[in-house]
Image (cartoon, rainbow, N blue to C red; front, side, top):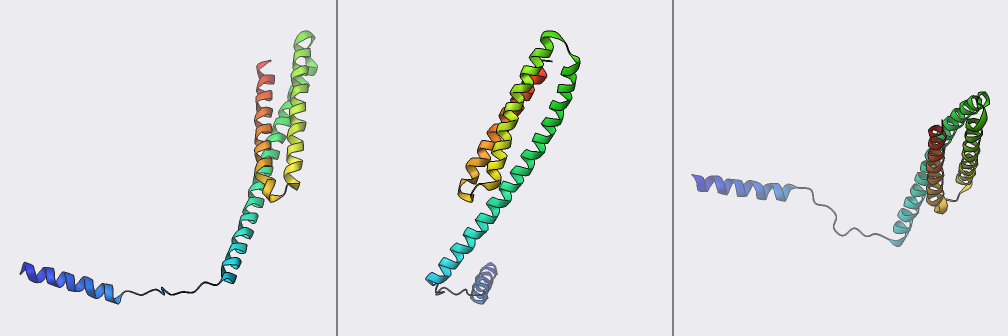
Length: 143
């Protein structure tokens, strides 16, 4: 009986294998099709890079606006201070303003950067953003 079960199982597997859909193994691909697919992939990559660049730019602009609002509050606070503390805070805020300008220049470059240079520009903006954050932290520490 066990032998019959094994034979039935093997026959069933063989029938399933015979009934499965067969794919075209001799599909011919022309060079035009390959070129068209490559162009399509290149266009998709270009679109993706543009979208990523726009996303990074929008995020960086939002962070920059938030830092500028905070800096404006600190400048108002510095106006109320006196003596050496005021001078130190104004010095820190001036350094912060320099980093802000560097970031703004990077964002302007990002808007007009070609796709092949976009990754480098995004990295440059990310570095400028980190420097801006560090400078803002220094301003806060000096309070």
